[in-house]
Image 1 (cartoon, rainbow, N blue to C red):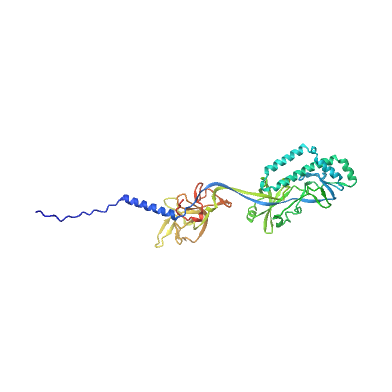
Image 2: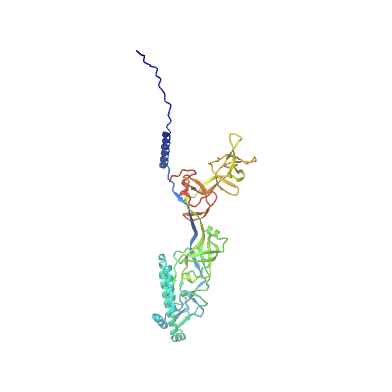
Length: 462
């Protein structure tokens, strides 16, 4: 019989490293990490930087001041007007008449039904006035329709009354001889206006804040009066075409205009734009702009208050939402401690090792600069680090000086990087920033819409 061989040695297989399994495991970990990050991180809304413009315009209520005086009736009786409202008159023109017994006045009033006295020139003027009113009409100021209607009616009445005054010359001469009919001329040439509001004696020097802020403004229309008593107001005479508009401005606006002598304005009611000289005055600790105008007075003869827009500037640049703007604190390191690295033009500093006397070269990211300092953050340098000046024994301790920069977070690469901005102008929603600034943003960059929710190097989940 043969013997069984029991000396069998089992072969131990070595550990086989499966590369495919390792790659698969890493991918699984990566996916799990991003899934976890997605559900635990708040997505960051982004904004693409665009080119834009913000016009720095300011709209104010303006108080109109004219050189005007009220004329009072010298007699009592029936009243007729002969000069068109808002028209220029000379000292020889008849403005109104008073008939003490009413006989001549009734004939003049009766003649107003004869439309044949209306000339083609008058008709063309009325059509032009209607077209101008229609083109500038604003439904929010419907009350101006009634003002326009009364002015139009007054113009027609006065044209017909003037014609009747000529046609009834014999009757009028007889009444004047009997001292029952009186015609009146202005004391001087000017512009006649049939309305009073109590502001006739107000000047750019004696006005009050209550007058400027008046919310219960009313004007008395005199053109519809058919009779009058002696010493009652009969019309208003404006004797100069130089006029002023007072607007209450902020300290900031007043300061910005200190070095200017003229300003561009726009009348909001009819979009009329002009450039005028101005003066800055102070009333009860508030600044007022006194706009000096030399034309267009008749255009706004019906107005005491009007909305004025100051067109101060128009800045063009990169337009970004204000919500994206934030601030970040930086170390400010003197420029003399920086030097170019040996293999490139990149700026670097020599940082002393805390555990030995050796130094190491550090290339910090520079976010901004001024005349004396570079701005760097704490990614490459830490507060308390000692920087050594090249070829000198001078040192500088990081954190000695700090300052804040205004900027936004650029998220082009999937993580947040602070970029400095220089704001040119702003309104309630957007700012215009200077393009092509060093260490800044560029057109079409993607930035975090809410800069207050982002920190440096944060991974951005969109």
